[in-house]
Image 1 (cartoon, rainbow, N blue to C red):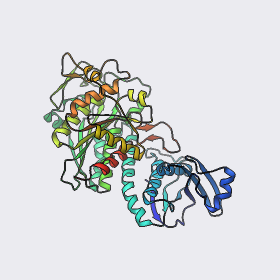
Image 2 (cartoon, one colour):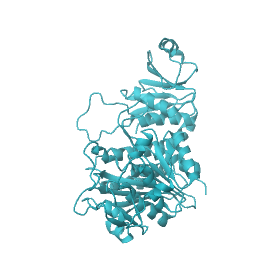
Image 3 (cartoon, rainbow, N blue to C red):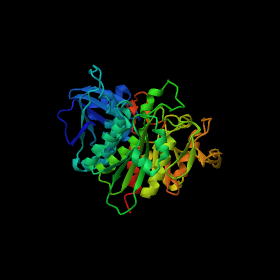
Image 4 (cartoon, rainbow, N blue to C red):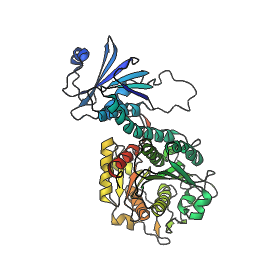
Length: 469
């Protein structure tokens, strides 16, 4: 993450970005250039000016300023500058923190595996956040930066290729969370067998890398049940015996984005010392092919005791989540459960790459999740689970099927209907993030690659609704 320094001046900065609302007065040294350029402060517009003091970037924020997006646009325009300043003198502490958060999110890059420097690689490494109230802005930044750091932690995990981020390596990458007070537990294959998580074991059975259930606990200070985040952590998805076509399969290294987001959310809570008890349960496996692979037509006995007829081994995410949800509900009796998963292509057909699909068994929790998403720009859209969706999963030989052979448009609804059976009576929301977990190309407000979607949403949800007993 960018180094962020908060103060009144920035002597080392070689460029400065200033947010300008629509119709607001321009900085004196920029008035003539802004007039020539026709810059009015409209949302999404920039005016890049060379002055005697250095480079000055005006960032339009429009009539309803989104300072996170404005900070991202500023960073995108200044990626070639090593050290910049963000002028937040006219902003509230919360808006100043949002301005810096956008810059940090946009400046993220994953170059750990590159062996040669690229001549046009971004240089931006540090920003000074300028304000007349540094103490207040510092306090706001401590809260906001926790979610940013959690999101970037998740992005780093998702960016790793599957040959490096195996299930065991994923678990090892969680170890630094212990430094922030997070307790880490792992159920390996022997314990999964003893406790009967048959669905998770089946999905991971064909890989040389054994599956696991990772449990991250943030104790908090409240005497209350935890809020639970449950994540799909498929470190690579071949589709199993129902193997995927080659085109696009390389993107399946990111099929653990849900689990990464849950880990990042726990990190955010710990970094800002949230009073809310919380737990993240990550169902981690590699869906590979091998002599021990599970097959279409198999019947699995899940942790809940219910039997599941397998139809398509490429619908593995709902299987590992079924065990994780039922295990979490029984073992931890949470106040609420929110699961995140790159689950279905059909949700991308329905919502594109603009929103995650939200399914639930509790309208109040769903509304709170949606509001948290709107606040931080991680948008969701509530989708239905109809009686017919559940009825379609009736099986002649088991308690239920996990999908239909024709996995077309209703598949996201079928997957949610299946998962709801394992959430039980616990208030539950399922977020299908298949369309929003990564971006194919960079945009002014977004870096290319993994997004860390869900981290800041969950952090905001907890802050708003779970930090009182």
